[in-house]
Image (cartoon, one colour):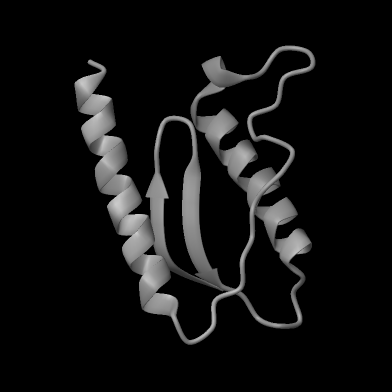
Length: 91
């Protein structure tokens, strides 16, 4: 697996990853959410969710990328810049 581009904000995460064709997207996302939740909660125990709360939302959005991969990278970069501006405006 290869992380091509990513952006992490307070309320969402965007990643552009390359995964091998033998690995299903749902398997990858399940592993990513499970392992990252364990790592985050290990480092920040005060974030442990109470009953009926989860660190990650149950769903995710996935799209395949073909020839136009540069458009996806640009979208993530622009979205990240817009989020930074919004965060500064709300402080």
